[in-house]
Length: 169
Image (cartoon, rainbow, N blue to C red; front, side, top):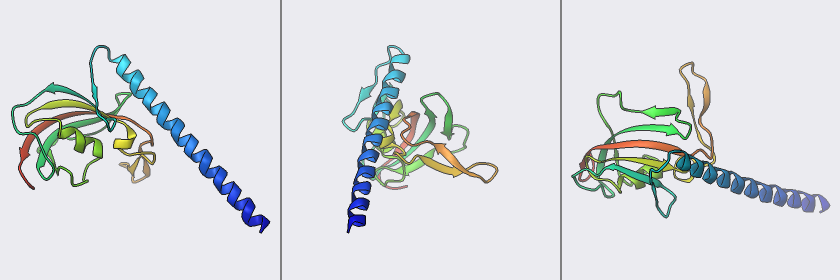
């Protein structure tokens, strides 16, 4: 019985520590975003209730995507340091996805719904709208499994909507 009580107490302490540690990492991440925003000067991003930061570069003149529409877009994904981790700029075709389908991170899904066809914008997605505390893992060119994006990493996105089509592809 004493062993069960001891294990329970140890488990509760571990959970409590993990929650505090996660909260500290989220606070550190918010500080990183604020420092980044301060470092880029007078550029004013708008923050949504979910924590997405967005900046409209050019509004576009087409339709605004809604859930169920297919969006084709050009993008660059970078870390706050400027390190590029993904892009489709050098591809022949833009990347397409169905809005609201869960096929992209929630920050991109939310962000494109703030744009119009032909528009350009920048987003800053906190990890809660990107790859979360676990981060993103994948295989490098040598076949080794590695961290691509560490947990609690905010990301900067350059987005240009090429086409918005009503409904699926």
